[in-house]
Length: 201
Image (cartoon, rainbow, N blue to C red):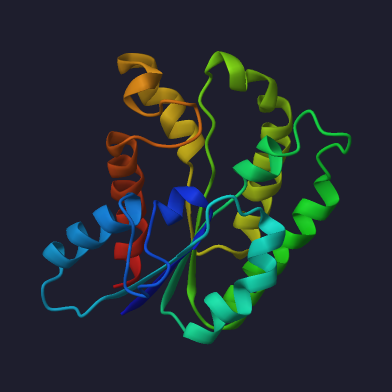
């Protein structure tokens, strides 16, 4: 059972790029340990293809080599925050049409290779210096949710989940900067993604 994880720094999680088997120290590594213990009779091959700083256009440029060529059984996609974060305050506004086109290209190519597609939505915590990103972030979430409904075999609504759980214990338990997950948050991402992966085992 080959599973490819495709995304930005949240997937990357400081993986060793020189080691193809490196899963990093984030949700992908946590998920692998949990899943192999749940299914001791299944031989899993996990590939972490996250690259810190990537936007959806970068994923579209490398989806053939990093996902399609691997012929995975399952592909997990988590991307989007950098399309809003890196553009905020720049001269160019968030380009909804360009984002939608690139995101749809990624999903179409993954579906075309026969993999089960799990879309994990990006998330943004309401920390003071990130609140200004929310307007464009919500536009982006609308695009992601619409395309996930069209192409994905499963969807993980992380932004909604984190908004709920952070109300009871505080944002700092889940993110120091509003964008990158703590270990606790990474466990939540792993747990909710496992629920979707188990449908296809």
